[in-house]
Length: 109
Image 1 (cartoon, helix red, strand yellow):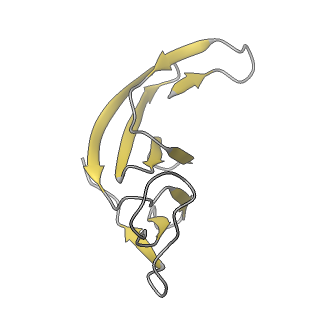
Image 2 (cartoon, rainbow, N blue to C red; image 1 turned 120 degrees about the vertical axis):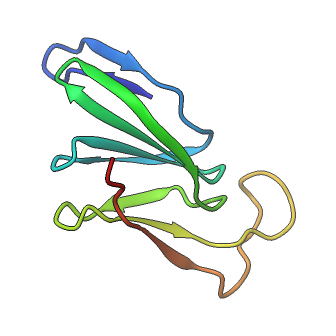
């Protein structure tokens, strides 16, 4: 993931995240960036100052859970997910009735 200054177009930092990222959310209250990765991981990056960021943690979610939204009031993150049928690549189907929303509560560190 690249973090840049939108006004100056200057790159502030580059951070490793998982494969298959579909979405990124920024929580202005906690100053955290969340990257949901299709491989089933979440990367959390903390903004320490305008020009300084660090990776806080990577944790397991569910393979395919990569579409993300964030509630800025509760700081909860929501991912949509389903179980994939056997196969490989983007053309494989999703198991019927396996859709779910994963709710992730904020961390306190």
